[in-house]
Amino acid sequence: MRKPLAKALDIDLRGGLTDKVTPHAGVALLIETGRRSGVIAAAERALPAKASPKGLRQGERVEALVLLRALGGDCLADLEQLRRDQGLAALTGYPLPAAATARQWLDRFHDPAALADRPLQGSFIPVETQGLAGLRTAVAHSVHASVTAVSPARTVTLDVDAHLVESSTREALPTYTGERGYQPRVVMWAETGLVLADEFRDGNVPASAHIQELVDTAAAALPARAEGWTIRVRSDSAAYAHATVDHCDGRGWTFAVSADMSPQLRAAVVALADDAWQPWAEERGGVVRSFSGGGLRAQPDGRAQGPAALSLRGDSGAAAAGPAVRGRHARQALRRGEQRLGDRGAGVAGVAAGQGGDGGARQPRVEG
Image (cartoon, rainbow, N blue to C red):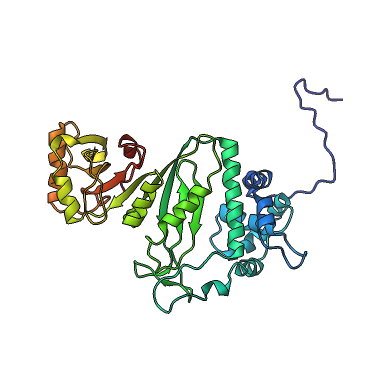
């Protein structure tokens, strides 16, 4: 008789187990997180009740589509391959829905009545349907659950951006690039990677439309905090408009937006004193980013009004130079005709501080 090993593990092997293998075993953590955090249960409660108890529950359908995206699927047809994975079905406790079933379920989020006011010409943003509002509730629950578990820092940077989604569907409208598709806008909490607000839009909806309402929705999605949140808004030039910057300033938020280099703004920047410029960062190739807190606020019509900070991309070789040289490099770049931030030339970004003071305005990175 063989003697037991001195450091052997005492494992009791029981029969009756069946082998189900999946290449997606790592997704078990995502499934467990969604369920233990209450996000899937929140979706179950918030979505309209099913007419029939048969089939998957609402929360399971949401979970199935989350898994589809997490596992690399980019269309509903990819569900068919995942449905054949018995190991994945063992992890979820149910077989994933067929592509046709998932498509029928998604169609229920569409409400023709919401499109009744669509004009014959021009852009249009329909009101949110009941189903989409239910999904927003589930997303808000995920934000609350994440904040409770992680306890992030007080500063919140709201990244506002639109994404072009090319589509060949009959309903898709031309985007500003000329291609047909859609242009959803998303507000992301940069420090955590959480999506706080989103809006699915037709391709012809201007990126600047209703930004302030969407940012307000994102701010409202933040959980209550005893000392409050320090909110910063960061956007490309879609937010470079009176209504948007005044709205952020009125709420006391620091904001950073890319600004078109108008002739009036160019003249105001060039007129700044040499010693108004300070180094911000040096990039590869010796390209220097400088900022000025010289009391200049970039208004959409080119008016200069403080307080604010500006960021300019200067010439190479200015890193070790004094402020007078840095100022000349920045203004020489402007005189050469470079128009816009992020084009590997000189550009400008208006960064208004709200109630936070000029120093706080230098924090957001707006280049690119």
